[in-house]
Length: 306
Ligand SMILES: Cc1cc2nc3c(=O)[nH]c(=O)nc-3n(C[C@H](O)[C@H](O)[C@H](O)COP(=O)(O)O)c2cc1C
Image (cartoon, rainbow, N blue to C red):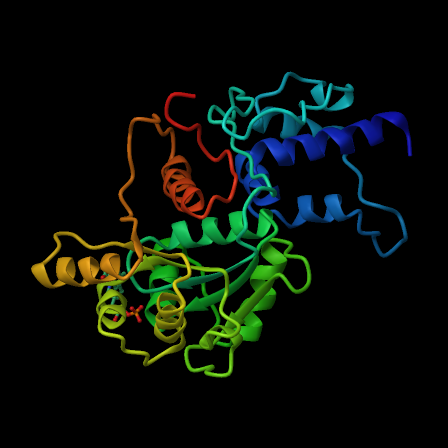
């Protein structure tokens, strides 16, 4: 491979790091789907045996999308220092918050991510991407109401069949084999239904008031409720991201009960002090707060004061 092609591939990796993942890089550079960039990264051979490479046109698109000067992709750059702290990422005009996922530093190796039918599906999708990018094993559960909300809010059809959903999402986020498992609502034999094999932590994001009520009363009518019940009884970290407004006394009492039982109630309440420039920035703010709770390092946004 010519030197410039090798250099472009190295710089491509740097941009993936800066963007916080291939999907985010694709989004920032205006690609409707990240598939092409994933293929370049995996160096998949084409049917004629040649390997996908980064041509000048694609290089220019990446430079523009990430706010780099023309020709940046063709030059060697010094690698970012490995001693840089996750809270002080390099910012760039296209990435003012220095968005980047880092893999090391948390005791949490596996997470159950339950997505229920409250508004806020984009949070769940981004969180899944972040957890996989951080090398965590994810057990994903979606309620049927969540599938409806996903279609309405993000135009994404989530198939009811767990295997189908698993393969679509594994492909979308290029999850390594054995990293993403999707279970159906009634799959009582799933490992997360038992305290002996529960994940290290659980996140319910977004959490509907219906699911919050079920958890507060120990109802285990579906796998989301059962996995949460297990997590609470086993005293594992449990983060509930409720979304409703206004909140009735019933909602508040249920959330109080969960908080008294060790759950972290982390409302889906975006902030403005980090000066979000886009909806994606607002989504990242919430995902950053959730990852912080599990001490999963990230640089989705700068910490206050850094
Ligand atoms: C588009 C849409 C948005 C909804 N938003 C909320 C919400 O923000 N909070 C909430 O508690 N319920 C919301 N709901 C209602 C829940 O989906 C409904 O109560 C459902 O039974 C929850 O089931 P689940 O907890 O099994 O997902 C919404 C429903 C739809 C279709």
